[in-house]
Length: 86
Image (cartoon, rainbow, N blue to C red; front, side, top):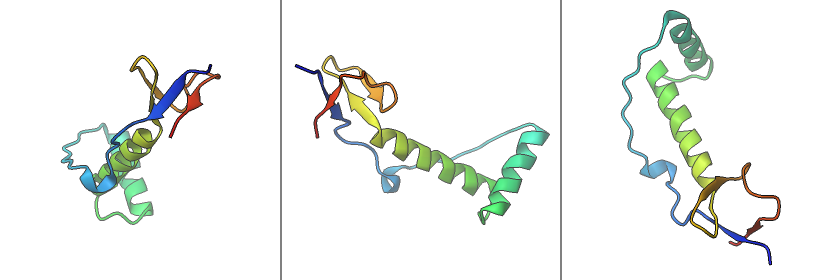
């Protein structure tokens, strides 16, 4: 019998994330962040960083599974013989 892996029971949703960000970066990184924020139409570099973090957190939560022993796995680290139970 293959071990059963369950999706995270209550993954956080975008609307549930409450996050305030205060960031500091070197000049080169700051320029890159500002450039990407402008390119993507964000009102500020902070807004760009916040959206990037929120999207990453939500995506990671959706790809998180709980193994038979309670250990957490992402979709890339599941054993080959894992059976996902939804």
